[in-house]
Image 1 (cartoon, rainbow, N blue to C red):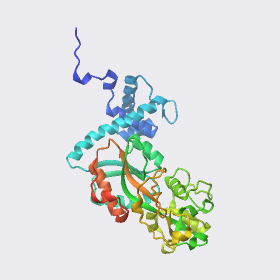
Image 2 (image 1 turned 180 degrees about the vertical axis):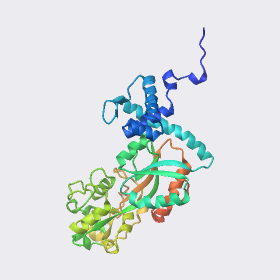
Image 3 (image 1 turned 60 degrees about the vertical axis):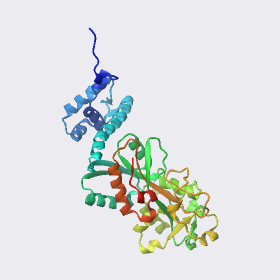
Amino acid sequence: MKTQTSPANIGSTPAELNLSLTALRYIVAVDTHRNFVRAAEACGVTQPTLSAGIRSIETALDVSIFDRGAHPVRPTALGEKIIAQARVTLHNASMLHELVAAEKGDEGGEASMGIIPTIAPYILPGLFQRMHSDHPGVHLRVSEMRTKFIIEKLLSAEIDMAILATPLEQKGLLEIPLYYEKFAAYISPADELYALSEIPADSLASDRLWILEEGHCLRSQVFNFCHSHRRTHTEYQAGSIDTLVRIVDTNGGYTVIPELHTAFLSEEQRRNLRPIVRRTDAASAASTPSVAGTSLAAPQSDIPGQSIAPDCPTCIPVREVSLVIREDYVRERLLNVIAGCIKHIVPEEMLDSRLKRFAIKL
């Protein structure tokens, strides 16, 4: 008897047909919570239901996804790969719904965002305020994390978007520049550099420089334009620029802060700020007018998030800050909602010129 093949079965195996999106959500939930009970609660089902769903995938694929003897429970080596693909599959499935919602002009729903610690304090308060007042239908979940982990979570579809320093030049990700931010030196009045009106970047000797710990992109950006990778003062082992400022106030030396942080300083502390210029001679730097940081966005340096203009000796170092998404992201309307909020938070002169004039088109 001849077996008929339906269109639904072409190119598929029985195992693939048994993998439901619901069961994929179950394995992702267990990976997230590392506990079957908490994962079941998060999914709104009983533990037996969740366990049965996971067993159905393991049976279909003939593998063990989780090491149930471990405490807390953890994925097997192959299970980690399966879970990573499950996250991407769930993300792609959700994009079908978002595609339809976008066509209908519906900007509501949920979105998850990552943001680096050296940008979060300046963007998040205003972003939450704008989203709550102007876009109450959008539930935005934001997690603060370092660049390395943001990239990992974007690629695995654990978050939808991120705001961080670019360029990243990471395959699979799309960068949408939002604004360009200058750096300023915050100098103790007791330091010899305090007498200068402008600070040549390569005069920021590392033996008096207070800087963030390894892993912060701002650290790499600072060392890049200071041309220094030597050991610095005792490093502050956290992500707070505000604390670095207080350390300088108490211990002397100097630190480097983003332009938007200056709004957090007292009037007295602002007297300690000096613009940074890429110049090797302090006297000539003091006699040369500053160049607006927004005009120096390209060319790019080899350090993520650092933009310089090597042919301009008096150029001010700036960092490019972008909205980053996966290349397959489709929620164009939501991206424009976020970008619109940024336009009200960041001074106009810092905004990317294209963002001022055009809407984001995917």
